[in-house]
Length: 298
Image (tube, rainbow, N blue to C red; front, side):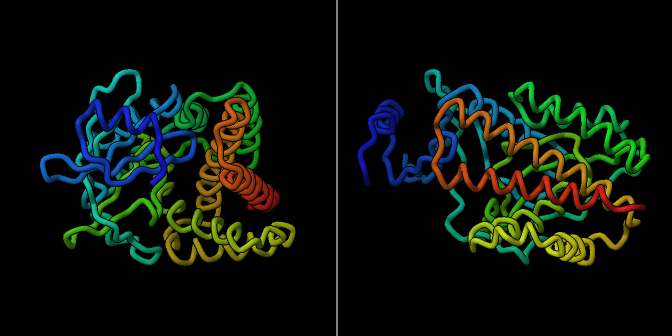
């Protein structure tokens, strides 16, 4: 294990035994530690943006609707450590969930059918969900707002509480229980199928990037195949127009989140090259998929 002055200082100050540590994207740190025979993780911020994420994550773990939505959540608390916001998280072993185990992590909870917000207000929620957004993001969002209203002519959006990054790599199976973690992008109000779309779509885009299939973007049929797959597997209860409307709102938030992330990384120079390139790819993929959908007639 390489020496790290920052990590060594934390270990000494908190009087813990270091088992392992990892530097995450955006200069966050994750430490696996041992104290009083108990294993636990520490997630440590290094700047204002990562501090915001950890504080928002705490809100997620405290939210009663999130507790009802998912079967199990780890214990999560923020501990005082100088200027670096630090969270202590339960150790959950090393067995992750998989792409096909979606239902194992969810409770059967009802969505309140009258939980709607105005479309213009929803676009303001998107800005809130992105955090620390650049002025360019606000301008892009305004353009999308006008486009979506003109295209779909739907004035209300059904919303629900959202994990924000619900994918199989943010799940664990520990002591025969199904845990969901990493609620940094928690929101009390998003399109109510946001988490479901993300679970199925994000890993597919990740595979396309990993296996260097970038040219598939130029072959527009890939978008039709992805949309068909996602709607077929999960969303047959929605009309075609409603499904496309909600999917587009999901894609807009994700595209602008990636764009904002690229701006932040470019300013701070605190990124790994592959992470930066992957983020750009995700941004472009979401953008092209939005174009594909909005060219359709309903």
